[in-house]
Length: 257
Image (tube, helix red, strand yellow):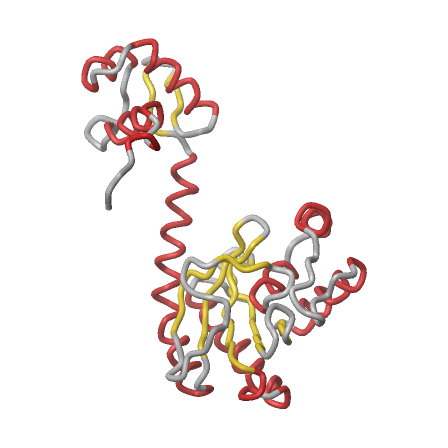
């Protein structure tokens, strides 16, 4: 890939070089030490370290007056570890779903106010279903999104409606705030969500929540395909299997509900 130098920020490059200089052998670094080893001006290092400390990427050690990596990396590392563990635990079950229902399945998580799909297994007869790995979809009208929103608190839902809005992607998209809140309560009570032509005409999506060891809903797994092939009468059968599979994945992630 050709890199355009006009898009490179030297300050970001220097900050990343500083972070990469820390190691298990050298967990603490001083301003002068970093400046000398990396060839960056001392005042520049000071400003970068101050900024990164505010954001939690580094922390100053009072005894030595040096810096070490901050706790921010613990949460980032947890996200990566969880994603890898989720993929490992979910993959066999995703294959079972595709084999049984001959439709595609995804694992989605909430990123801000949108759903991003982390994992996917395509059916043997794929169709355009508005989702691929790394794809962002609106949360309020997709099966995975509604599952993930259903387990958020009321304050988050209110912010979501106010800041993101309930844009009508089809005639069946729920756009009334009160009706949407009631719908999320239904999703939470029944333990699964159905996106019935709310994101795209002719597309039916069914999703169930996956929990981590704390009991928090961290992702959703779905079965999605054309409505004329899945058919509404099959929703109870698919949703029951999805909930079972989601519960097994949750158990494997350490959740004991």
